[in-house]
Image (tube, rainbow, N blue to C red; front, side, top):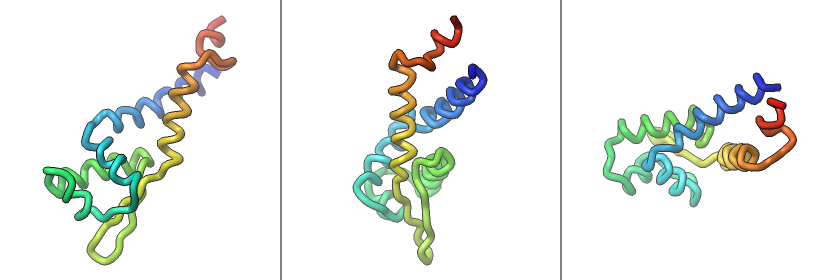
Length: 106
């Protein structure tokens, strides 16, 4: 039980680390409105295309966004379920539940 819980802590700490970058949070906010191509995202920020690509790669690897190619353009959209998973995890660890770590140590 504790090993499973530790695996979950590790998994979500990686996801949360990805979110600890203001520009990525802004990108998520932007994508919450609609799917956008990389060129449209760049219009909102003073960053280079390679910097945006780096941010998008990390967001994709964390399963927060998904992409599709249409000709020369790459379109990104938010994967809301993944963000809900992070929210649910934080709710879980901040609530006194039966699987709380303090109860597994007893």
